[in-house]
Image 1 (cartoon, rainbow, N blue to C red):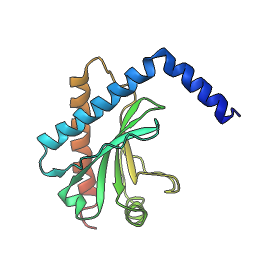
Image 2: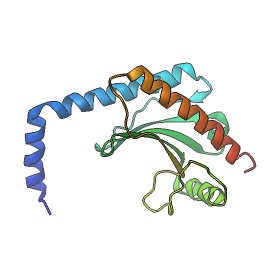
Image 3: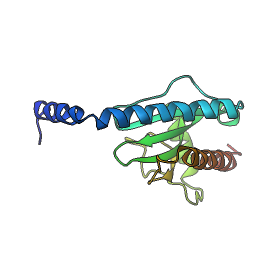
Image 4: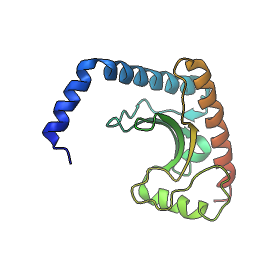
Length: 164
C-alpha cells in the first residue's frame, strides 16, 4: 500500500503536468453551467445554489421537483470522476428517508434503474447511468442527453412512488 507521503509526491508530479487542473476546472465549470441550465429552464424544480464538488470522487447538484420535495426526496445529477460517467440518482434528505423509499422500491419493477443491494455506503436509493462515455467535445449534445434522461427519470420516479 502506498503511503500518504508517497501519494502526495505523486499528486505533485501529476499536478505539475497541468492537465488535471485544466480537466477539473472544465468539469466544475460544466457542472455549474448544467445546474444553471436546469434552474433557468425548469422553474418548477428547486435548485439549491450549491454544487457539491466532492473529493475528486463525485461532483453533483440536486434538483427538488415539488412532488418529490414534499416526500423529502431529491434528484442528483452526478459526475463520477473515477469512471468518467454521468449518473442520475434518487436520494433522500437523510438516511431514514433513504431507507423508507428503498424498502418501498425494492419490491417494484424498476426496469433499467438500479437499486443498490444495500444502503450501507450508498448515496442513492435508485441510480441510472446517463452515459459512461461522455463526449466533452460536444457539450450541447451532452447537455441535451443529460436533460432528457433527467426529465424521464423524474417522471418515472414520480410514477413509482405515486401511492406512497
